[in-house]
Image (cartoon, rainbow, N blue to C red; front, side):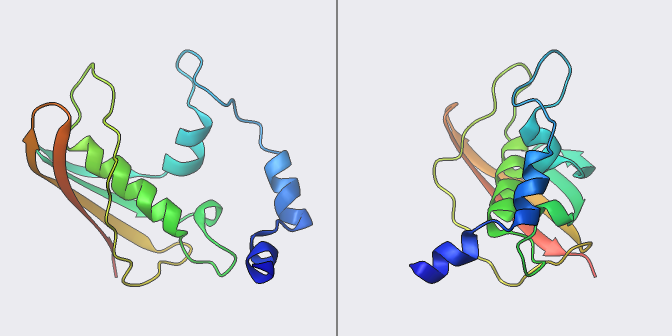
Length: 139
């Protein structure tokens, strides 16, 4: 437990960087939220078809761990956001993922370019949707 606490502890540099962030915590008018700016900035949509979305994303330093690997939570976030975009309906709020299964096969490093592909597999009613997302490094 002590090792985990030490690993997760912020350095003075990390703490200073976070304290200097000057981004609104919620959307006001047309301004982006902190979440959009921090977690989603940089996603490029390359292809959209009914039930299919293909995006690319260059791994930024802000979403990496101390070893320079894309954080597992950032990968889960990308899977969730791009996956839900395949079942988005204009004018309705985004669905919330309540069950996700993610297999991490390898790491992505800073400046690696990733391809995120999501395909809608099915839907039962408005609340139950199934999609599959893949995140792979573009070599």
